[in-house]
Image 1 (cartoon, rainbow, N blue to C red):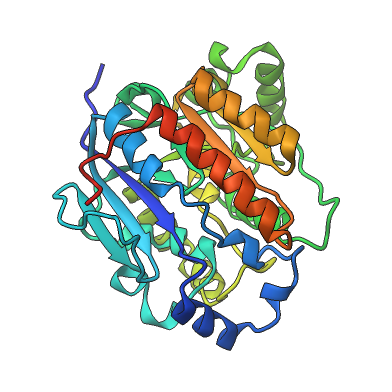
Image 2: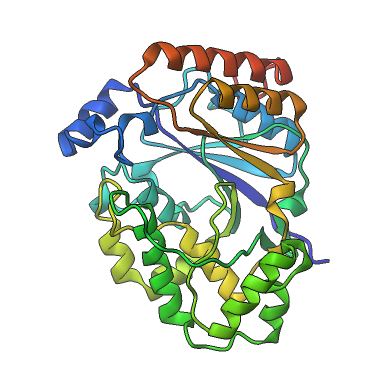
Length: 344
């Protein structure tokens, strides 16, 4: 087995209560923060106060990580130990071209990560709602110096034209089909697409996709994604005009591309190692008391290393938000009661 090169972690974070940030954001888009069904709404930026447990989880359960790149508009948590040698604070202006700034579009923030000079070729991208709650191994994320991923073919259709999510997926697929559509992928890739780790049902789906020679979609798991910088650079070289235009969007729009484009590219080139992601992590939507109970139980059980908590609460109910926030903090404190080296 080929050894992996060093692996970094990238996490993007926003302090949604920062008054200077809010003032600047309102200047460019005074409407979206009032629209709670909008993908740019205020609830996407609110802070659950859980980042210290994110760091504790990484330090305790991912000892193979080289450095953590903390990507932010400019603010950092007051408790964060910025002197830690394994922590690199990256502001948007440090790596995103000036013509795209300021940006409140997560797609722009992520599509330009390859411009961070200090970042290693291999890195794992986290959102701030992805938590490591148990031991992990390096080959869950990279194996033979390739990103580990789970390829499941699907056929996308847009049943909600009011959101930008599926439009962005279709944009990604447009580029993929431009470069790979109507081309035989070769038996080497077929064997990867039909890995037993994906399960019989998914193998059949993947084989049908290969036979049609047209890519209609891949299931996008809301988990960490392992990336290679060189893939970002390659796609930017080939599609500079399209990506450049999309990165001018300061907020999410239906004309965006996303970093999922890079994992699709890996699928089409064979630059990945098959893995069963559902053995690694659990995804939960937090919307009510029942879902909160389930999430808290999962934190205590720690049955899988990765736990994703997607905030779908009604942001108008501040009292309920505070109640849920306090309970989650209490549960994380049970499994991570001690400070880590990333805290003052």
